[in-house]
Amino acid sequence: MQYTREPSEKSTVKLTLTFDKAEWDEANEQAYVRTRGRFFVNGFRKGKAPKHVIELNYGKGVFYEEALNELFDKHYEEVLEKEKDNFTAVGRPELSVGDIGEEGATLIATVPVKPDVKLGAYKGIKIEKKEYNVKDEDVDAELKRLQERNARLVEVTDRAAENGDTATIDFSGSVNGEKFEGGTSENYPLVLGSGSFIPGFEEQVVGMKAGEEKDVCVKFPDDYQAEDLKGKDAVFAVKLNKLEKKELPEVNDEFIKDAAGAESVEAYKKETRERLEKQAKEKGDAETENNILRAVTANAEVEIPEAMIENQVDMMVRNAEYRLGMQYGGMKLADYLRYIGSNMEDFRKGYRAQAEDTVKSQLVVDKIVREENIKAEDAEIDAKLEEFAKSANKTLEEYKKDMDDSQREYIANDIVINKLFDFLKANNELTEKAEEDAEKPAAKKTAKKPAAKKTEKKAEGEGKGE
Image 1 (tube, rainbow, N blue to C red):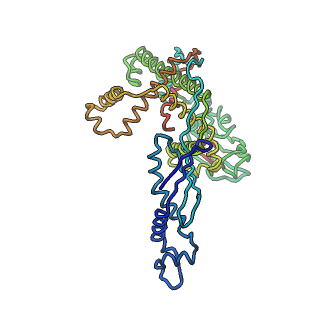
Image 2 (image 1 turned 90 degrees about the horizontal axis):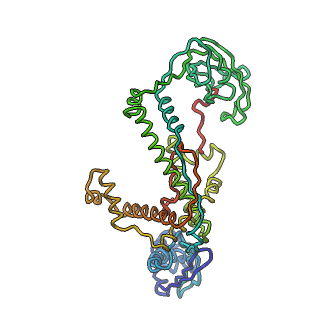
Image 3 (image 1 turned 60 degrees about the horizontal axis):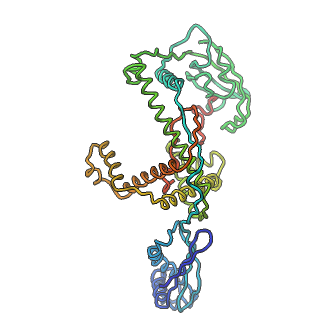
């Protein structure tokens, strides 16, 4: 087999594989042996007809396709190995037939390859540095949430229901005098003001007293999940059985010890501030790195092959399906798409722009790493492994025994990416712009693994007036 390589359009390489008569004859013979059982010829048992007889009945080229597939499978990986220093394949090639006949055959493989990146400016750029400050109010809010988590319900008998109360109610709903499925319940605990029932319901329970009965008139939303109830006027016969309010515990050292394990209120506040400041720094660092990545990616030029974008979309769809299954009890993506009235084609389209941006960022990161010769040294990798070994109560040697090459490669990649961002931070002008918002959890680094990668939920009480 002989082959030639030449660049083609849109980040592809054209490989022309040429097979001489001997190779071609052997491949056709092998194709005959593997497929002769598929052909029926009068006068022969199935699978026993000679090759030339089958060719006479089905055409001279009856085995050509099978023979070409055989030759491709045999030689393609061999060619990629020989060309590994010239290009990296990133998807399956498109195959076409060149010359073909009794004297030999030519097969053309158009291979999508990892494209080269033309870097723009990635040093000396003015980039916004994100910072988040922790305020006393943020610490107080954490303390308030701790109280809320440890609150207890106490019965109320001396006043009417208010927003924030838990009203234990019986209700029975009807439309045009007819009760509907799922519209009746007893001793249902409803938190007033939570918005868990349909609009107008909870507002009419506010003001009721324990033991009181009342008809609550509402209208189901036009987009309600039950088709037979959409936009319908309904009446719910409601009885308020019990009314409870939330009682927060007193904040003192004893409460803090029991609820949070801290020695005192002041100790809890100190620990909480340190935690929030760590989260704020992580969030600011992550967003700063995202700003850096967006800036250097925007300045670069690259022609991305379709195969790379589709592969990234595949990964995003798989991740979405995994998250869906984890969040909603094993729900399948196909079922979810039917539920929201969509389809896989549109779902994939929704990821395309993000996938293209992600692939471009990965390619730019890889190019800068190579341009600046950023590497993970063995000593740096071992230092990380030493940390992991200590946390697992093992020696470094014991920890290494349980590792495979992919784990070491992952750690090396993590080190390289951290060193890359350290380099980019040091070589660009980061302009500070503080944001007073430390309550949100730290965002993950979107570029942390450059080599890698709102669902709707039915109301809990569907059909029960919610």
